Image 1 (cartoon, rainbow, N blue to C red):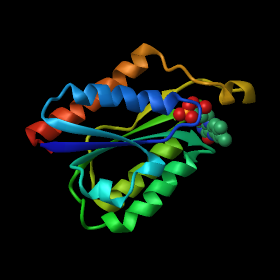
Image 2 (image 1 turned 30 degrees about the horizontal axis):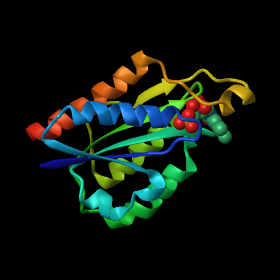
Image 3 (image 1 turned 90 degrees about the vertical axis):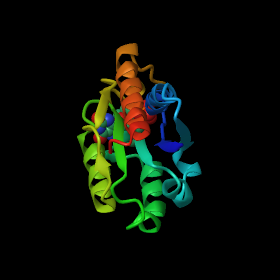
Image 4 (image 1 turned 180 degrees about the vertical axis):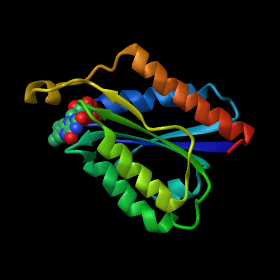
Length: 163
Ligand SMILES: Cc1cc2nc3c(=O)[nH]c(=O)nc-3n(C[C@H](O)[C@H](O)[C@H](O)COP(=O)(O)O)c2cc1C
């Protein structure tokens, strides 16, 4: 039985909904165990014991969220040379951009020698004002469907051993 680890952080709920949707999609694959962990709860042992990864983060100040960065900081060296070749994908919830966070995750995963199975999935909430940015987010169904599909594809690939 393969394990897919989904690590997420969210301040206003968008990334949380995206991670949840991806987990639902992945759970459609009966032969894969899906672990959905908040970034503060996830650590090196979770990385080592999983076969594939999905990372979901907000973009804050053109970077991934600090809590997500903390997760990578804690896991990077314990995982180095021990997880190479495993598949991963990233999801970013952003106001209007998302590319900075996606690029950072890509660089970290390149360092780990993970294999990207899809381009980063970026969902923009189009929040522009401080009030809108700080308000709870409701990700539209069509965007959640993309997250669900990504989770399902990653899990199917793991189950089939295609990566
Ligand atoms: C401190 C802060 C900085 C932000 N910086 C960016 C940014 O650089 N680029 C962007 O597209 N969105 C930015 N946003 C908007 C968030 O990415 C957006 O609100 C998104 O929904 C956050 O995801 P979450 O709902 O999972 O917390 C920022 C939000 C906050 C609170």
